[in-house]
Length: 326
Ligand SMILES: [Fe+2]
Picture (spheres, helix red, strand yellow):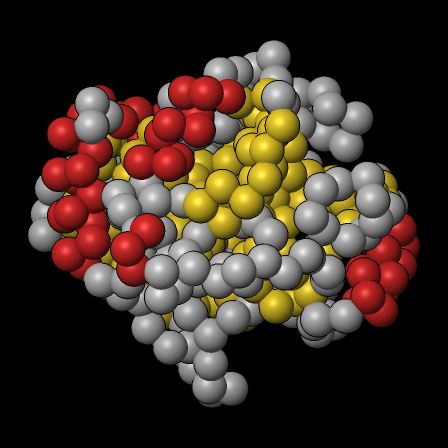
């Protein structure tokens, strides 16, 4: 199938201290569209839509859902039929039940993650040329999700063959037919979602696009000066996979944010996936420095459609520190 899924859209994160989260994301340059005592809705500089990040006050740090924008209301109905036919748990969130967004379809997908699809989101002022208000990392837009799953082959097959995603790059193991990690896209960049072999399902990080590599450097200076030195987990550096510049941060609840710039166009129909061998040293940080253990071992807990913690399981493939995943 080829559903009209457009792109990575938004994430709903549970946080335990709303003011601490507000200060952190404000320092990154997110724009607060709306808020109340239990919610903050942030958008990025390019966004004309209401939000790309919904922070919700919760008992524990967790991910309520990650969301994809689709091209029509009819597409939501088509996706609903697909997931019901495949016996997945689904839940409609009708228009008016969530701030700034129309009806959404939430699904416990093939890896057990709660994902969401939506078409309509309220329009607000695009702040792209309000240069006098830009600060911090000047985050431009949301770019991708990276998910730790125990069975990458299963996730790959479902997203490619059922949902119509395309693969831009993947990591394989020499002599094996199994995929260690895969970068899948709907928009013509390297990815909207990546899956990597790890304890899961968990959300490893949310990637946000910056306008240039210097913005990553500026962000490090800004965060260090603003008291967020300990929030910088990895980078800046250049990935081999995706060719992008990266900087990984941890928010006050440990949710991982990637600031990202410089991947490439993948929109041609005959674009071929790039295969990386797990033993290829160039696939990790292109300049050679290794990621910290926390980056491999820690990720955000997910919630199911009823708000319960999603149990995790060990990965199907041997768990090693591959330095391959981004
Ligand atoms: Fe990423």
